[in-house]
Image (cartoon, rainbow, N blue to C red):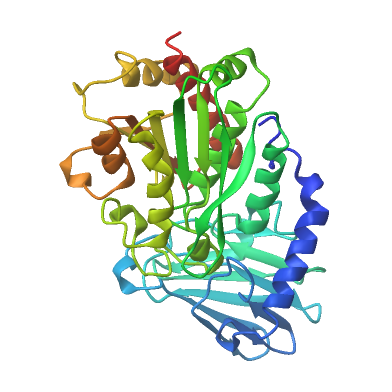
Length: 394
């Protein structure tokens, strides 16, 4: 993935550790509903992106972790949980993850440093029902995190965006604040030929959709790579990216919404939430002057999907969707994704709003929840290259 945070993880270890210490300090007044302890271990979700409704102890080595969405409006969504376990003594513990709403759907992962993640050992895992899973974990010599997906929160974003901002003609700036006052950043580069034509990227409207965040990072890394294709693209097109438009929801371990308890992807046009209003302000530059050529919104769901504008609608270049989609399938014949067309039923979403307001090509990239990180990176990188070729009309 080139200069990606995923292939040079060790560079950010010191930075990430420092940030983690700051987060620990900020969370020093623990929310007791998100921390429980026995003589055997401590289980807590009291950290950034931690997800837990409550926890309790049964005996000395059995823990019950209860999870629920921020509002029952999203109870049918993939449940998010993220907790840290610290063994006090060398004894196995049992953790029950109870879905008060929602259901089990994503096999959990483990990390000992919050950076490197892998699926938990199969011998530890039992699916008791669609609402309950059991984890029997042998004693571990160091603390560990468990979550359905790896954690990507402000620390990881900040390290990645800072490194991107060190590239020529790439800047990182603040476009606004979240409802709780967290900074919202964008990366931007202008075309070297000052064409005024732009590709605009957003991500993380929905906090749990981590594979979509990984795809966005891989896509962006490819745009800013040293290949001749990427260099030619940056000569002709500017790039604007807002990778985390919902930092509150991500930090608080929400399933679907911002802290306004609104699905942000239903708020486009109304812009009742500060998070969508931040992006609306950025887009206004394309009402006159600069030209928005393509808008991509990154998400994730159960299987890989692409949403595009309806067939037969005007596209620039001609047959744009068919061109990049055909080439992508030729490059990755095993990449099986579903293709949907946006319609009036998607009114209120980011892509429908952008297409109807700015007449730009729009795409929703949905990464598969069960894909490996390496597959997601490969698919998003190939997608970026074929998008560049199509936009350059090569």
